[in-house]
Length: 101
Image 1 (cartoon, rainbow, N blue to C red):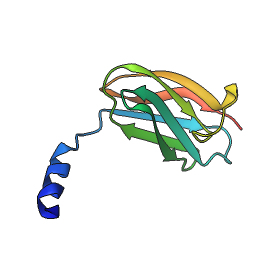
Image 2: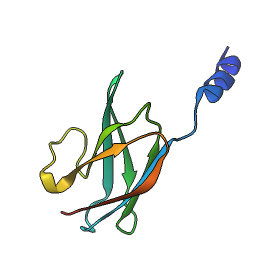
Image 3: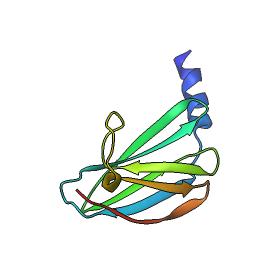
Image 4: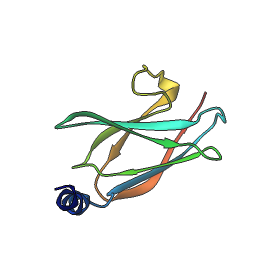
């Protein structure tokens, strides 16, 4: 049974349809989080910050406002640690907002 389920799961995976790259001012920031609302509730993903640059890739169902933050999903970000971005399937670009400490 497991042998049959694995190929089905692999076929169900779809390619990423967005990529957001940005820069942080504070070298102490180690991760950036993206959150958005879907039919399954709030979805959150994260990316490691390397040399003050992060890159988030994934799949969203439609165009929507997503939030980018430098604090985890269980914390309330301050305005300097939060950015709202309109993302859509096919978005492959950079975010002009630079997060600070």
